[in-house]
Length: 391
Image 1 (spheres, rainbow, N blue to C red):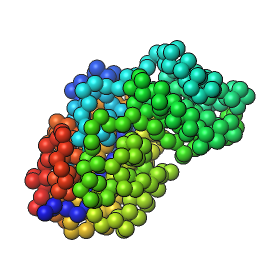
Image 2: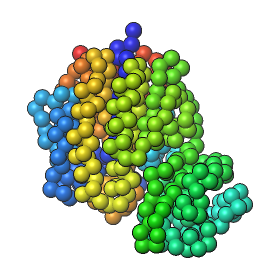
Image 3: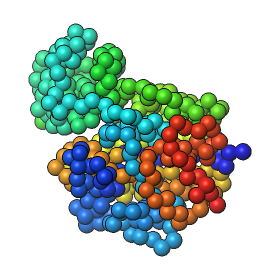
Image 4: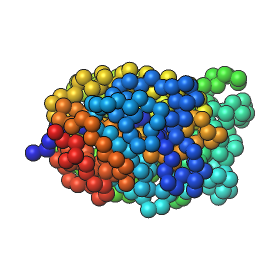
């Protein structure tokens, strides 16, 4: 018999808690999203996360260290190379990559852009690394005049396409991204991302209808194991896009972190068995990538305030896990992700409080634990820590 009926997994996108041993190879020495943000704003207000044990995790120095935490706590290292969203989420679902997705720090090579023009029938602007908000301000007016699409990348393996809704309706932008996904497959680019925006020159605003078109995971994930066992998996936020819509019983897209919590609560009230998998992306998108520690801190405080809404709805055979997928330190010169440890916090009626899980060697340990908790087929990677946290 499985020990749990339901697992709630909430990913605070970009919440890193200190550099990994190989961070220097990624240019991320000194990154610590949580502590550096706290220092930058004069302290973080996260009493509920602190109560779960966040301040007791090795390497965390800026969060209050409670004497008797209500949850189990630890940190996880990323075994896969890279520091992008797909790699982090896939690894916590049991997929450890042996090579990173390609990145294009000098911009996309001519052959890729020639293929893009040929396959989409569209001209393009830029084609190099950029901040998304900066690039639409820089090229938005020219885009409106010419109809050429704004193309850019980052330190991650992404091919991002920005288009004003007047130039290209959102659904048409999605179709262009679907065509681009086919050519991106030849180069193993991790994600093609639709970035619709609106507004006028000097006041362009990105729309919440962002959509990711990801390369599929190379092997079955935790999500597929759970659905194959007859349990439901509900993906909230961009989970469906990250996993190419495989292994999901239902998908709920979100417009904000608050919307993510709302939909998680609604799902908990209607689904009694399986996995609820939520990504809260605002930390990363709006604050980490924009080097805004104040905004990051306020978002953390807001989600901390709302966390009890999930906790109080946990049944006797439910467990909540809170984690991150990579770092995105808003205090460093870089505007990209950072190669960091991520926290893992566990809470529920059947979870033993105060257990220090130490440093897990891979994010897949979390996926292995969830598979054990739900009584489904073991994953290819990861060691379950379920026996350590069960009462």
